Length: 561
Image (cartoon, rainbow, N blue to C red; front, side, top):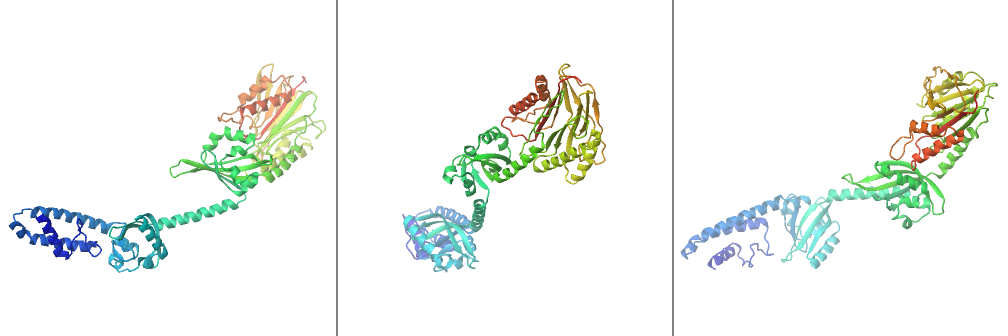
């Protein structure tokens, strides 16, 4: 008890105050600034050393132990003092009225002061440093009710008037003071505001664009949709949210998505066509631009569709397709000794494939002719080039001459048209003289035609040198001759879209499969052979949209010349 009385007397001597039980920090507010605590500790150490002789006279040998414990306290305080002054967070203490009591250097710098001492002279922190002083009054009310404020965002004003944002954790002490820890979040807040502005900007773009917009999660469940999409299919937002695009798709488009889901999901960007069913039951042809959304770690978090209504565009293409179909043979020609069939399936509404029958009437006494062509690419531009080629071929064929002359002059004409486009056209031009049993052909870069002899069970390719049309305007084409036509032989001329077609596993249809169909159906009619090829092709590619036009002409020899 004596030792305790010594400590008490020492504190009284230094501070001239009676300490509260268990407290070392004492002042008019029961709190002392860090520099005041330093002065107190130094003075207290001096008093203890001065009282050593007095303590020994009373038979107590505990002063050394007390001084050792005091050294531990001194070291702990120095560590606290270092952390307090060197922390990146701002520490502050104030009165409820807003009077500054103490703060560290980080807090002073945050508010634009050179030292904490300047802040200690502030009489009303709310008026001085709150952008809206009323907010401090509201915070003080909450603090009195709950005792603390956690993660409280405050809009403050620096000494120079520049606004900043701070995040504070504040508590009301038993002494009625306000103490807290604060960090500057101005950069974070500005970044959030910029992000919000950017999001709002793109939200307005999405809402006002004429394209439909769908935002989906990783399971393709629709979580957001714009007004344009609602109008496109005639449903309200509430009727669309929570569903998937499959719920609004035609059966064909639904099958396409299901069949190709793995392939489509393997790409971050996709473009494909399809059709939705509107509320009124009408099909709406669409073009979809789709993106996969990923987080910072690369994990899939969703998908979005930008959907274009292709109704008017498709109407124009349908009209163009009708014009293009009118340029193709409308029926199989009736040629003595031959059974003939031909067909085109375009991968789009219009295409760049072409076939034609020239009956020999263009040039009196001429043989029956078959032409199959394939313009690079497909779509409108390919269709226009095909139409140009057809017109020139028919015009030139009416002037008579060998097929090599016709193709050579056709090439010279096309080369000028496609000089700067990089496009070209492959062509197979064949004439059959049934009476003589002669078969003549020119191959301009096209796949060789096949001739199958069911008696010999043998396929032969009608080969021959020749560049694609439009590559070299000076190229001279040569014709080839075969003189062994017999009853039952089947001649097939196709475009590469047939044997290069792939199924959903990436497997190619191939020429071997194609030849096997011809062999198996060789004894049937030409149109039945044609239907067999397209039927097998459809089964092979079930669910996959063709990526190229599909053209096939079948000519069957009915009688020996």
